[in-house]
Image (cartoon, rainbow, N blue to C red; front, side):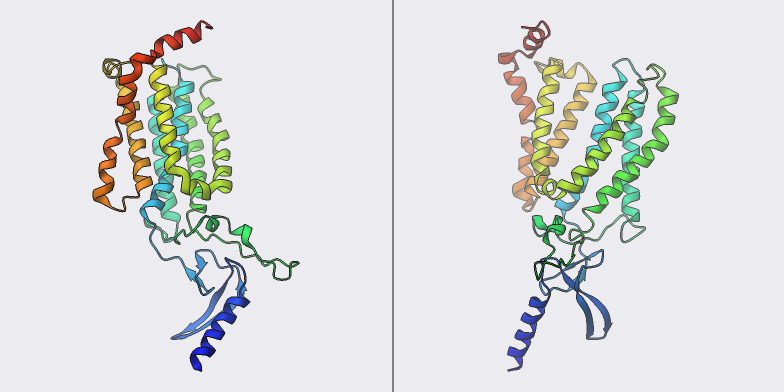
Length: 319
């Protein structure tokens, strides 16, 4: 009889707390006595459990979570490097220093972001486990019990994977505005006055775009970023090698910059493979890394059939 009463009480609690992400917040705890408030939104750093109680996020991020954060951290760095290279020109000696500065800015922003996140002062974060795609879009699951009044239970169920990216982008932007203009003004003497700050102006455009991308598509990126990395790295490697008219190993080895670009793409290939496999079974997943050089080798073996230099020359002549 007692068990039936407890089951009925548990079912009643579930029924009285509607919504996928609504929960009851702990108000008072004394030993085994716990008093919870009314059903509503959970405080920041908590999410609902199966019993509809708000529980603190105390777990450590999984490897996949860190890889996702690494991907979101790499986006502004790669864009910085692209626009620095684009606007610096081949004869500019300032590009290397700007590349190093961009790396320093993003690295410092990542460290500061971790230090100000909970727990404060350590390079460690506590998080809630991502269970499904809807965890990223809790604002879409606010219940309306009477189809008139909406109970707002929007909170960060994937704490802190959603908001920590915004904090990181903010620190990146602040550090860039503090450091980059002084550096560019000192060392970019080979560029015209209108060209010196174009890479900084570009960042003022792509940071808002990245912010909107995270705000709207953060959950989709969380599940799709390994495949995005692989596809984009393969495409950009093929475009770079064809644009540089690399048709054999000698063409690849003749310049150090080409090797740096190649190894950078190999790192991205490995990053994508590890993200897809998640290294759940180490002995089975690590051999997949042997596939990293395959796209470059395939390109070199088949370049003689396509002759990228001929295609580029014909395109330049308008044929």
